[in-house]
Structure formats: structure tokens, C-alpha cells
Length: 360
Ligand SMILES: [Zn+2]
Image (cartoon, rainbow, N blue to C red):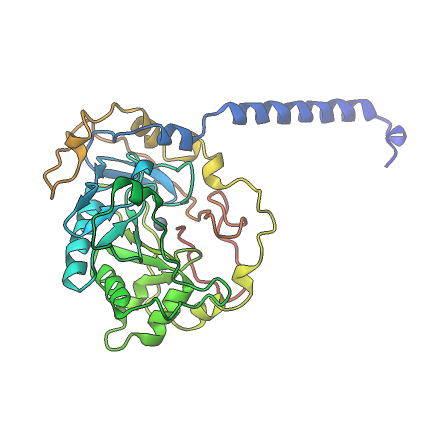
């Protein structure tokens, strides 16, 4: 198109210039807005309030968080410097229960990975989810006999259970005790989902005999090849916690699993440098209560909010204000296609696509 041929090109140019200026201003405004991950990452202690989750697993925050002690009967916290051993008291209690039950089942003890930041919210690195205190990562490496020093917990590497090329479990590493551990975790009514690598799901599908009903909760997902991810449902007292879709009522060993063993889920990321949702989220993207949550005063001390079998004190503060729950529910993940972001609905990639993509 030749601009000279336009009789009224001046208004056109003026309008175009105005649009460019507006866009530039908007970009400045957006970049000046603090990132939610920076604000939440800076808080070292929880907000003291009754335990309550706001929003969704990949877009939210929580109050009344308690810390899992660094170690206890049957568990050790890994990567302690990350300060991600915080959760809803129901989550922390469940980790401790799993530690006891797993030992009774013959598993030496849990190496506990990330739970949440003290007030949840998006993290500086890693996970898309783990934001409302209801997600926990447990290593598939058994706890060593000798207690791990804090330095060892920072540096010890995890065992990759899955061959990166075939996406199948390394048979030399998988044991019946691994299966029992996952079965035990899935047995708890509050656990809604357990995320594992597709190779691990396939191993369970191929080998579990007898009661297979628990396989329904075990869902294949990218990553999760050295740990499994245990997710519990929204807890009582959290009216603004947004529940996830229930899992389909079968063992998930059929077509949806077969999709993971096609080429499609493993195509190289077309846009590996695209920013992830957690890098973009501002407070405006989170449920509105999260602004109060991130700004609330600290708990009086670490000890006061460390969980000791339900004895951790949570001091009541003001009643939460009602608001709409967050709407968008899909998420990003370090190892998943960039097309999936917390700001976009889950893309339909081929058939059959396991739904929903819950984030890691
Ligand atoms: Zn996780």
C-alpha cells in the first residue's frame, strides 16, 4: 500500500503514532510492576492467620503455613536452603504420616523435596504449582541409613528412575517398595493426585496386580522422574481455594497413557526462551487476597510456626474478605511445552490428550 495514495494519511499516521506511544507506556507500566515471585520469594516466614488457601495450585497463595521440621521419624528435608518446607498444616501432617506409614511398609524413609514457600505464591525457580500449600515433592530415592548433613542435603543428587530416550523406567532401579510407597500415598482420601513420569505410570500399569483402583490418582506428567508429586484437595476453611477437576474414573492405563509414548509430547520446545508464567505474574494476576497475604506481618518466630504433630500455634487474625476465585487453571512447567502457560487455556494437542494438565 502506498501511503501517498491515502487522502487522509495524516489522521492515520497520528492514530498509529498514538497507538505506538500507548503500547510503549503500557510496556513501561508492566515492567515497573513488581513480580509476584519476587514479593513472595522475599518472605521468610508465613503470615500468621488461620490456615487458608487462596486461588489455584498454579496461581495462589496461603496463610497459616507451618514448616515441616528439617527431620523427624522417617523423613529428611532436602535442599533446605530453598526454604520451601512450608505447607498447609494438613499437607505437613500428611507428609509426616506418609513417613511413618512408608517405614512400616519397608521404605527406609522420605527425602522430602519442595513443598511451598512460607506464603506460597509463584517461585523464583522451578514449579508452576506448589502455590497454595497443598503440593509436595517426595524423592524416589530412599532415605540413606546414615543421617544426611545439611551440606549433603544441598548437594546429594537424586536418582533418575526413567531412561530419557525410551521414557521407560530403568528396571534395575525400580523395586516393589517404590510401588508400595506410591500406593500408600494414593491411599489417603485427601490425596487427589500423584504426578509421576509417564514411564513410572506405565511401570505401575504393567505390574500392579490385585487392587488397581488407586492407579486412578496416579497421573503421568513431564518431569517427575526422580520424585513424585503429591497433591491434596482444597481443605476445609478455604472457601476461595479453587478445586481441580476430578480424575477420570479408570486406571488411566489405556489410550491417554499411550499418547505419552508417541513422539508428540516430546517435540522440542519451539520457543524455549519464552518467559514462563511465574516470571510474568504480578499481584494483579493472583487472587486479590494474596496482596494482604504477602504484606502481612511475619509470624513471631520460626519455632512458633514449625509443625510439631499438630501443636503448632496459629494465631487468628481478621476474617478473609470474599472474592471470586482465580479463573485460569492451566500452568507452565520447566519441562513442558511453552504453549502451556498460566495465562492461556490448556491447548488441545492431538488426541487423546490427558486432561487437565495440572502443573508440576
Ligand atoms: Zn512438584
